[in-house]
Length: 142
Image (cartoon, rainbow, N blue to C red; front, side, top):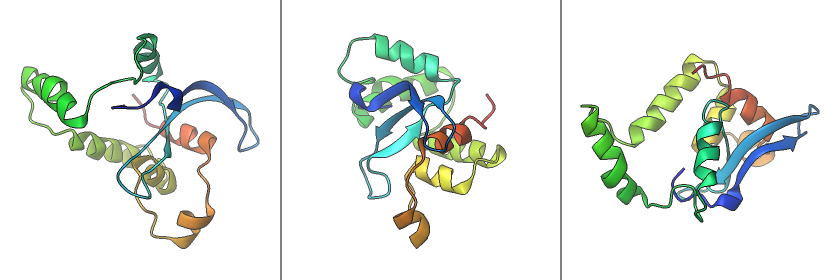
């Protein structure tokens, strides 16, 4: 959620890309690799209220910090307060584990994480389907 511009966040947008109309929430993000750039990240129903709360704060970006500033001023102090020793990258490991445990399909998992598919069909011919990603992310039980 770091440095995501408000214009790239969509809450309860009506999507019909799989023939079924539903309201989905998602944002666009990604910087580092071709597979990760401008990817669609679905917002799980459980965290949507927290995202909305952040959106109510009239900032340009939802969390207007760099990775290192956020890590040093928020993440690491919180880990210390909880007497835990984790890195921000550990959140990606946790997410991947939750996807595996909750049967989120590999295509959706890789798209959300911004990993290269290593398959010409997935990399070249498969568009990201917002409804599909939204359904898959909500398989994770919170």
